[in-house]
Length: 191
Image (tube, rainbow, N blue to C red):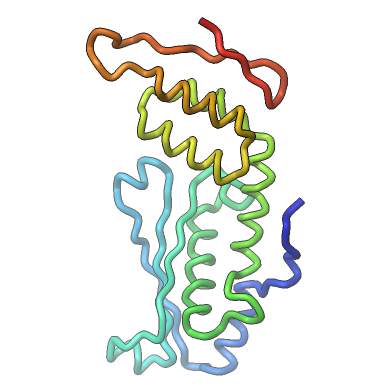
């Protein structure tokens, strides 16, 4: 269960309606800012630009911008429409930057993403993911993600220990400590 009430957050659609009521000639343009290396990782990055009028577009005078990123295959909408979801998020952020943020700056869609992340983190097997990685930098990122998600200290320590066990010199290359899975939430090291 999320630690916040989604009803407290305005949707991007509600922001759009208010914006176009105030600025019938307004324009919101989006640009795909995804770098090729991000695309290989299935990550989308979109920039949204808010203009108060068509004339502002011609003059190159935006009111605000906003960026968002999404990852293919994560969460509900991203299973099939990560790019479109990313565009909506970028528009919501740009509108917030233009003063259309409702009672909270963050949009409901963004908070839904937080709720999905929190729920997924509860059921995520961090140790099993760690043993699939052989790169210390990726393991550090995984540890940071697990820590931010509130993984138990025991799990964080096991991910850390596994990362430290990966050989950095030629003599020990190929030797790593394996981690076997025990009951949910508990793991045991094996030698």
